[in-house]
Image (cartoon, rainbow, N blue to C red; front, side, top):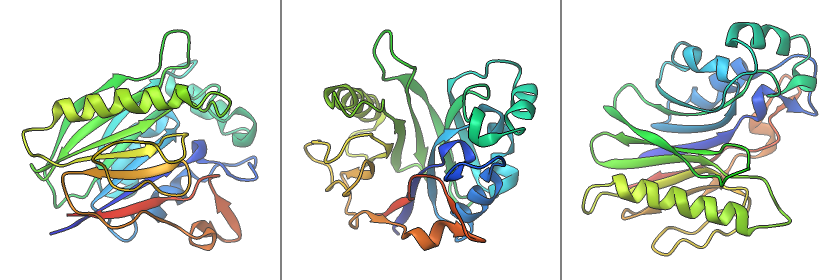
Length: 232
């Protein structure tokens, strides 16, 4: 049985262009509406982690990359005064892996992948259905120095593969901030900087959502399109 693995950088819940209000609830409902097996999310506000399950009806495994400036409820309240202006400045930043309720899931922990002196970037991992390791990463955005995100992707790869059992497939998904990452043994990257790469199992080509699929009531959600692949 194949698994649909989807990844989306939700841009702190912002639309394109950013507006005063946020759209994170709409994003989470949209990305989970067709009951995917796994969803990897990046650029979540830290306050959102406790509500992911109730908003998506999926198991939630969160990892805070940057804590909120103030206690989460207060940071969230201030940020909502103008979501497009504050973004993650007060509310912090987190990643999460959502897993469909029909699959057992095991949180395998997280690891920092960014170097000293840089904003903290994390890779987290979850074992899905007892047979697949899914790792979710958000690498540093530094297009002038692609060696920076490339090094972080390599750290994420080593982290994920170190958690896998012998012969167990690995999925490395997220915002790589890198086009065409060179990972021997993995499936072909997508055309952009968001990827779902697979080692040790068959997979379909990465498909990105067309703009209209992430447009709700005339509002384009996030500056990234969700990407996905069938694994297995």
